[in-house]
Length: 251
Image (cartoon, rainbow, N blue to C red; front, side, top):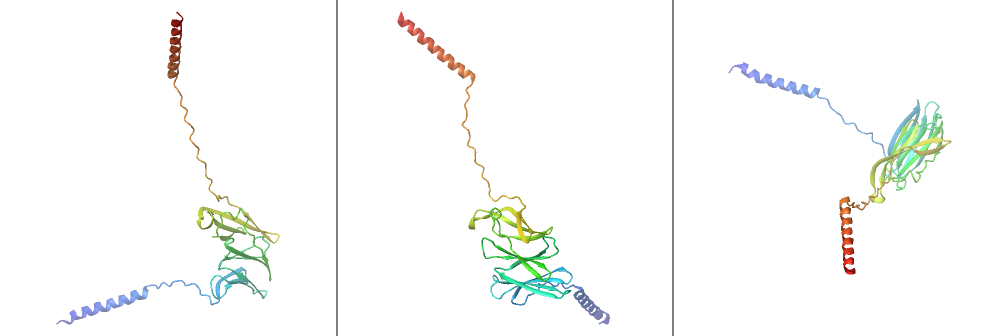
């Protein structure tokens, strides 16, 4: 048997092996992004840099159920070598941490909002204003009666033009039978004289106004002029007959 015919299959096998290896080498490996895992007992962490070297690390921590625990704000000013800590109690997990300067005085505010077990509030908000290494807690105002009408939680906080904005859906009804109306309410918070003030800036409707049904008016039957004339003629003819009978009786 000719040796040439034996070499062809060997060449084909070697070429196919090379192509397979090159394909394996050139195929990109896509790695899934993994969120950093916090070491217990920490559950949440966000770092905010308000100026070069001035960091605020916000943590939530506590072993056990996800509901309870504490928040902790670690301030690190590496330029002035200042470090301090603030902590407080939590009823639920932290939803978000924001940074603002609502009164535009150059002192940053750190805003933490977390879930609450209170069904009247649904959300707890903690606000701290920092002046270098001094931190002052600012009370967050409750919703007024008009602002909380139709409120069932679902808050979303964000910063817009140095103001703290609060947005939540509006529900119609009470208790478990309450249903979303499709409208949202927006409240703007401003910081004045070391106090927070909330003002509703959106127009919404928390109740559906029911329009009373108009009862149909009774139909007015209009008689034609011909029928009225015929009735008049009939009455006149009757009168003539009565007069004729009276004359006959007199005779």
